[in-house]
Picture 1 (cartoon, rainbow, N blue to C red):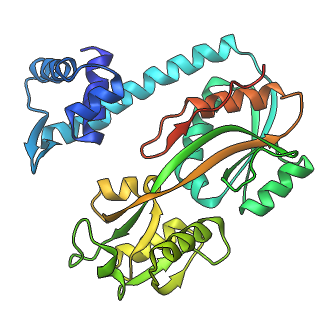
Picture 2: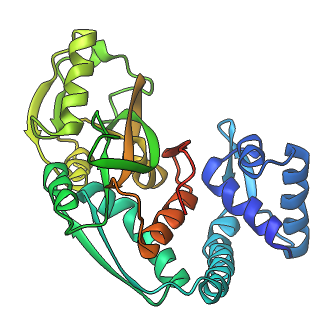
Length: 305
């Protein structure tokens, strides 16, 4: 059993497609297929099967998946630990993020950073974009993750990393079809974010462009609270696709409408200056190396050393 075979299997479990897995690994579909068949032959079990036009894990495959993922996690931990010896960075990095990013993305970055740089202390502050930018401006935070608002690069801030995510409408209501047109949603209750927040401003601008007036029954600044309401069939919601990934995989909600041409960007910001402390630079480099589902990196100029 080799790491490449295990990696092909774990990626297939997420994408349900040999073609998508091959694109992710930058291999040919034939090479990925060979990895999977070699793994099945070695284990003596069928790990996946075709179902409704997609490749789904068998019961044996689902049982084995957590152990294969642990193999990859331990490999990453070993690499990070070895890297920490080479990159002996000390001090502190102070990071801010909104509640949604703190729930979905930040824990993985922090975990990887702690393994790679065990001598660096980390302070985390959660808040809304305006408060976080003020903390960055005043120097009480070194870096913040924030929804992009123009102008990002300015006399005050520099973008260190940037990601883009498309938007989708999610539902748990069985009567709403897949690929549901907006015309069928005009009388359906919507659960949205508070007025005046960057997320809702973007959604409102989209609704205004297409001439759609949602029937709003609830507003919340927490994606988790919104999804909980959606799961209880109290309404539909518009979210970043990365917010919905896990719940869609668990089949507790469905994506019923992908919003064409509507996406939002998450940025990692620092104060503009000629000098970047080593802990901040190290954290930035770890963030830039992260790979997310439905949160794609946007190319940035090389960070100064």
